[in-house]
Length: 414
Ligand SMILES: Nc1nc2[nH]c(O)nc2c(=O)[nH]1
Image 1: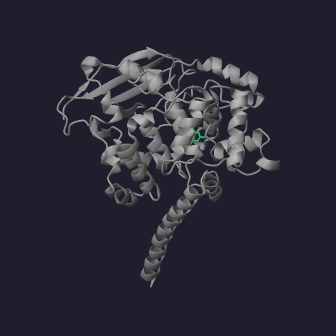
Image 2: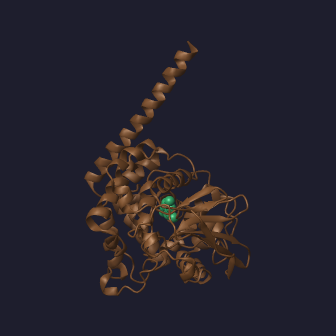
Image 3: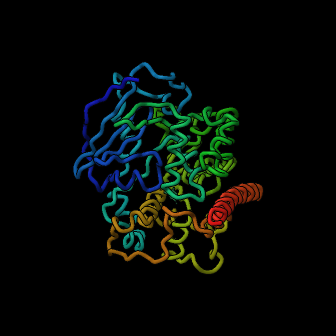
């Protein structure tokens, strides 16, 4: 496959408004790869996008496959449906959309800091953390992979999904870049067994079943129709508001509720999809980090909210919405990112807040507490039972492997 590479271009943007080193690796999108030369790359909407950043500019380049694809691009692929050629290059529009560059982050920071003394104290100054506007489908599958998982393992899983099931776009320095797979590509019943072999555990079934619902039953338009009408998907800006879900709090609630019906989607996963894939900026995903922040800094450790039940999940999210306003999801991601171990030394808060000893490491295997908390907040009993059985099966498989390995070692030792 031959490729066509555009020249490097640049657009002015300050690090306070956007920092790609933070935004691309803080647990929102799991597909960006950074080269030894400091270049970030990912296949997006039928091209490979690459970025470098300095204090004044975001430098970008797009690599397009030539018109002769090894396999024809699927017309139903969210990325390919609007894939551009170099001749109709919409790369700048895609970048502005993807990085969600309209909201003024400096102004938002001031608003959050004046409403919330804890935000003022803890938030890293000039961090440039923005909420990405990802394709709804990619966000849905990425966050199904995220359940009881850490960022580096989620990234490996998503990379594996793309390289096995996504269309090949091209290579950079011999490294292959695939776009995100279509719902149809993941809906085949054989996908589940293959993903189990690839190490997805109980998430394999969720991915295949959710893909089958989207591909065969509800359709991608249904999923994309759950978007905030103020923040439609890339290339769908012209859709009339009547065809989309209503805006405001009701629209967000409806989108959240509909997502909960899918396999592998609990309240936290649904909120991540609402925030990062559907443009509902008031959505606040309450995971272990956010729950610990709420306990440590917002008096959620005592009384009726001492454990993360569904009611507590709602109370925490509503508390933050009341405090931070319409873009509460953006504010949450600043504190969430500052709490990740990978960032805790690099992002220094206003008062150089010393790290707490009990930081949950995002890049380590989930602790029992994390697993239990994610299970508790599943809203339906049936979902809870199904999850537990699946998790136990995975645990059994792990134990079986460990058991066999121990026996083998013992035998070798004689
Ligand atoms: N509350 C949040 N949970 C997350 N998990 C994940 O992978 N990313 C996030 C996030 O931004 N917020």
